[in-house]
Amino acid sequence: MADPKNRTRSDFAWAKWSDAKLLDVRLCDLGLTLEESRVADHIDKVRAELRARDLRMRPHFWIGEEWFSPEGIPGVAVPFHLVHSRLTRLERKHMLQVEGGTRAECLKLLRHEVGHAVQHAYELHRRPRWRQHFGRSSRAYPEHYRPNPASRRFVLHLDYWYAQAHPDEDFAETFAVWLTPRSGWRQRYAGWPALRKLEYVDELMRSLAGRTPKIRSRQRIEPVDRLRRTLREHYAEKRDRFTLTSNIYDGDLLRIFSDASDRSGISAARFLRENRVKLRQMVARGTGKHEYALDIVLRDMLLRCKELGLRAVGPVEELRTDLAILMAARSVEYVYRGREWHAL
Image (cartoon, rainbow, N blue to C red; front, side, top):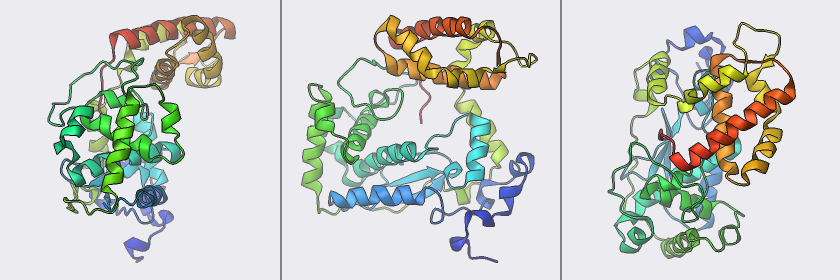
């Protein structure tokens, strides 16, 4: 039998199993390792970025159920679904999207989580100036929050204006922008109050260069090799926790599109993908701003169309017009009324 540490991605018997059979496998029995995974190169890149800044903290990485950096531990859990392409396909089928599924998205998430790990390693939240810029780390996370898309007090890195969710997220997002090579943050955020946070992080990281962090724990929290629940149980729980809020569109989408029984047109999800640019242009001409909100609304609508199996039937221009009206209304609602947040 091959050494698990030297396995290639094709060595796993379960990679060729049906979904029904694979879903009954326990997480701890998948036999996954990061060393031969698709995400290993991305981890190496982020580690190199830390070395280039002479930051001596060495975050450790392990495979877990989701992205997270536990409080007080300078390390990062990487979701198991990124370790093997077969698991990535299963994730997309059950959740309709894959967090970190592309190289660019994975690097953005890694830099964000490493920001948390840096905070933990050097206990940055204990510093008065850190609290002046970001707030108190001890503040409770809100069950819901209402981001202000027009605010310039926060950087833009992950989706949903995530820096606004909590002081720890504000720092992690600011750190990620600072760490990203050739991000041009001084020019990108010129004139923004967020620039002061970036300048503080730049000053702070320079002061930490070459210094060994106080916290060097290598503890792993809830590693996948200790989780005895099955993939089926994992996805049942995950869908309960991360309920898609996009079902608020159901009535409008069912009015615009046909249900799955009508096979005379293309899928509504495909129609949205193919007309994404045109729809954004149509709505942007009418609203003049909040294009980021448009992207999020459009993505939510696309995911819901997939779930409902809707079909695009009828004149293209009429469908586009109805969708543009719906997008304009929902994006304004998104901006001014807020949206329930389901944490990463």
